Length: 251
Image (cartoon, rainbow, N blue to C red; front, top):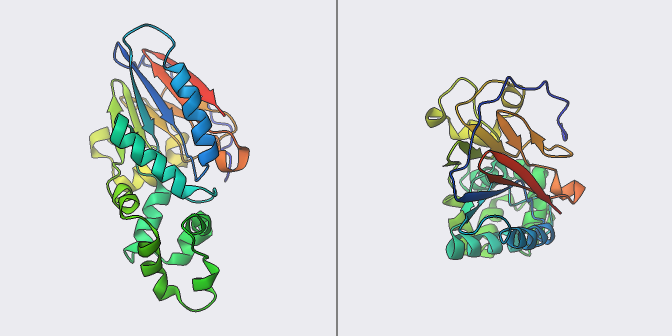
């Protein structure tokens, strides 16, 4: 499941555009790799100085900031600072949803921990085995709430599931084909996979997403996948969208 199989090309494209005078930097699944995030941000800041004068740049992050990599805490510190100081748009991913579900009693802790939560706990100074192998699962919620800064938890709870700029629709996983964009469910926006990535339908806007790792960004007429599996490949990717054009920055 890690890297998607070859997909048939979509139908003839509609020309989707970012509004004139705007540029969007859309970054895929970071998964605790603060080292890659900081390098990519340096490259993006240099890139912002290129092109026509007077262009307004916007950063959009597509979710899955936590789990698997070693530095979830530093990733969230960075994103919180950027959102506050520069208006970065940070969307929710399924991994943020899994942690919140565990905290709110809607998911077993073991399910989240098996999907990278162990590394997230470690970044906050907690060892999962101290709770899971010692029969102290009931204590884990309070330990997480004590270890995680309140602003981190507030940030995770405040993440929207989608964002629109011009002819582009941004979300973590994708959309349900055939359903209007304004009627998509959060569950699909965070979790959908094959029924979306296999679809050649025109969705009304071009979808920019992550969630389904690929070795190189997957650019289709109806969607752009920027999740290049950073936590394993060491390659964090950012789509640079301007007018009708799509190009990429990579670590």
